Length: 156
Image 1 (tube, rainbow, N blue to C red):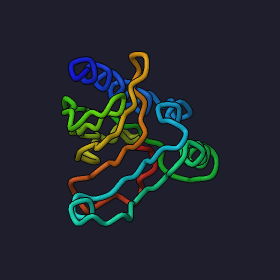
Image 2 (cartoon, rainbow, N blue to C red):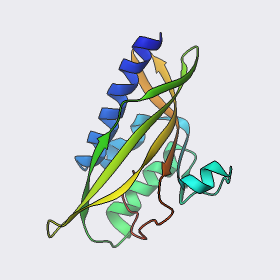
Image 3 (spheres, rainbow, N blue to C red):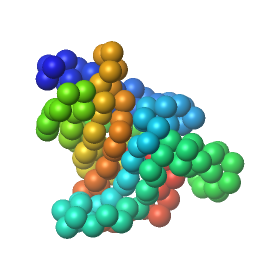
């Protein structure tokens, strides 16, 4: 299944990035299984095994709430992202469950057109592949820098 796993995960990664980059945030939670984990942390915290994350959600409901807050409650300068993804590496497979690592770079585009590199790092994921579709069980976003902009509004 390894060759197919890479293909399914590559497609899932592209779908994930397009969902965020195209401002279809309401669709973002559907890329995860119901009992899921989404966490953003720093490379040093990840390396040291520290569980605290900058962002933490352990259900699709929490992801949906995050999107609702972004749309209705939070006040922040409107912005968009452009994800540049490396190829996923398959770390392990156990039946339908596949662990992978994917490098990423995210550029942030502000309303005035100012564009900057916002974050770089790696996605550490656990996917379940069923009927040719990979869905996230876990995504740990590990940012290379410990300097995180306080305006971490959109999902990475």
